[in-house]
View 1 (cartoon, rainbow, N blue to C red):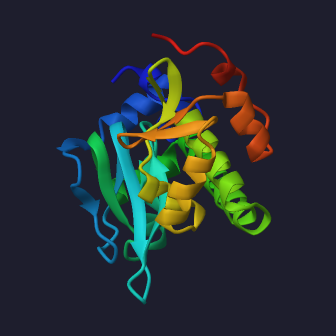
View 2 (tube, rainbow, N blue to C red):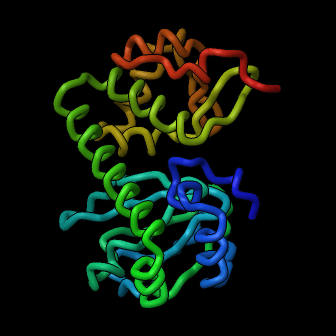
Length: 234
């Protein structure tokens, strides 16, 4: 796989070429269609997964049966390492949102690899720290911002990880139900918020299209990402 498929902020993208190539040789490649589960909550943690292409959603069901979307993972991301290193069952289900290719690496082989490759251990630690930072941000957002602001912040977070272009505008591949779970709101509340923000964003066929990046960033109380302020590529 060409390394430019994976951003430097991802686990695979953070590895140097020789280390990444050595890791890619450890596993077997599997392809998954949209809607397929990669792992289920409660499964034994016997392998880690490296997302080569596509997109997956990480979601969990709590004791009362409610489901929450914990995270969205993009190419270059690692999945399942917590269960492997913690020797515990999976704490979430991973479902394919966009047809995906994953590298499956046996847990013991991955632990040995990280233990003998210092640069991989550093990248994994940095990856874990970034996920903790993002979890803290979402928790703080839930306490400090209203629904429209949380929605704006979630859209900007996601479009910075994986952006598409729809009708000459930047877009995030997010359904309203996914947004609702991400920000801890009801889907109907998100629908009303998007309708009220029609000059900033619109929802079209499972995507949130940003009509005004600077305006959305102002509502989100964030700096507008420089690379999103220009004209999107055609």
